[in-house]
Structure formats: C-alpha cells, structure tokens
Image (cartoon, rainbow, N blue to C red):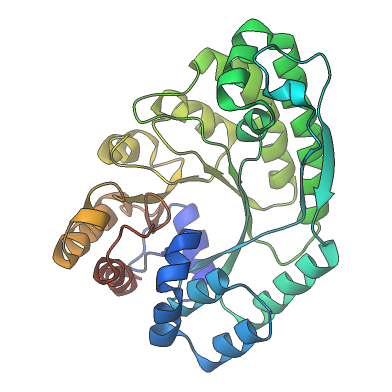
Length: 331
C-alpha cells in the first residue's frame, strides 16, 4: 500500500493492518542524531537530493526513516518592527505591523519534486498560527491580560491574524501536490486549557473555523497541533471538522478516554510519552509502550504512530531506534 493511501485510510477511520507513522525530532535532535540516522537508513537518492539542497536535513531524515508524512514549510508571515510599547504591561492602542516571508516559487517547486520522487503524504506545518502568533507580539502574560482586561483590542489582534492567515493559506492551497495543513497553536497546559473554554469559543474558535473551512474547500485534510490538555474543547474540534490532532500527550490526557469518546471523529497523531518512557525508559520499555499505544489507538483506524512531542536530545539514541523499528513493524 502506498504511504499516502495508508495515511488517508487512517484519517477515514478504516481498520487496516498497516498503521502509518511520523517520527520527528527537534532541531537539537537532528543536530545530535541526524547524521547517524541518515547513515543507517538513507538511500542514495535521498542523500543526493539532500546534498543538492532539494530538502533540509530534517526532511532527509524523515524520508530516510520511512515516515509516512513529511513536514514542508510554506511562505508565511511574521510581526514586523514591533514598537517598544508591545513589551509593556499596558495594552497598546495600535495594531502591530506584519511582513511576509518565503518564496512561493521555491515552495511549489520543492513540493512538486517531492511528490514526483517519493511516496509520502505532504503536510504543510504552520507553527504558531493563531493564538500563539497573538501572544508572540506581546508576550504570553501581557496577552492573557489583554484577553481579560482589553478584550476588544485582543480580538482585533486575533482577527488581524486570521485575515493574514487566510490570504497565505489560499495561496498555499492552490498547490496541487499538498495533502494536508497542520495549524499549530498551543492551547493547553499540563492540566487544562490556558484560558477558559468560553474564551476559546468566543474569541478563538470563530477564526479557526474560517481557516478549517478554507482548507476543506480545497479538499485538504486539517490537522491541529496543540500541546497540553485540551479535553475541554475536544467536542469543539470535532464540530469544527478537524481531521487529526497532534501531539496527544499521555501525561496530560487519557488516551483511552480520547479514543472511546472522540475516536470515531478524530484521528490521533502522537501519544507515545516523551516525558517519561522515551527519555527515561529502556529500549524494551519504548517498544512495549509503542505497541500498547498502537493497539489502543489504531482500533478502527484513526491513528498515526508518533511521539507526543518531537524527539529532544534527552532521548537516548537506542530508544529512538526502538521507536522507529517498532513503528516500522506495525506499518
């Protein structure tokens, strides 16, 4: 079975003996382990394309270890020349300026080449897309204050972000070689949402809906990345039409509860502990947990094997290999 089809079957919640996987590392993780992983797993074609600058080391490693999904990065935008008042506790009386980044031509060419030469589900990853983008302008404490003390200004910033995002997304979505979009915006803490569910529904959810509806209009899959415990808004994500949720931290949320209550509507992408087992367990522990999570979460489809965060430099190399090899066995 093609890897793209394997991912799509999982997203359609179709039971299959092949469970897709996507194991990614942090920048430090690639610095420490990237070359060893390429030496162990990379084909000659991958190494040639990497040396020719077709894709980054992270993308080369992803392809080399056999990931079913590949992160690609599209042109996007940032805040520009934020004035000093944005770092102060008092809410500013102006909105921030923005500036675009990246090349559409380079992005379209890269994605076309990848699709023509590799069997992989292409997922555009946009980190810090909405809520995080807002507090990047002010700092998280200041923007939380704005949500409570100056909600009109905070909403104006959030609306500005969505207007910019929709323009960028529509440009990206015209690329025929994409399979899905992942929008990252960490809404959770270790124990609960960082704001109230009511705040999410009033100030953040409407903008998210505009983004997801646009992605669906182009018949692409919608993935959401949110660290932490987002149990309180799981029903909202289902209502919004999210296809896949990442990274699903088992230290924050009960995997069995998620699968039982939302597994018919949401696919889960993550779930293997990066706070306990991967950094502190043995390779046998990692293999056992990986198998247990796959057995639980892949019932009736709806699961992509992955750690609950990108692999950091505190994970022993032997544990990383145990994760990769166990994921391969189930794929």
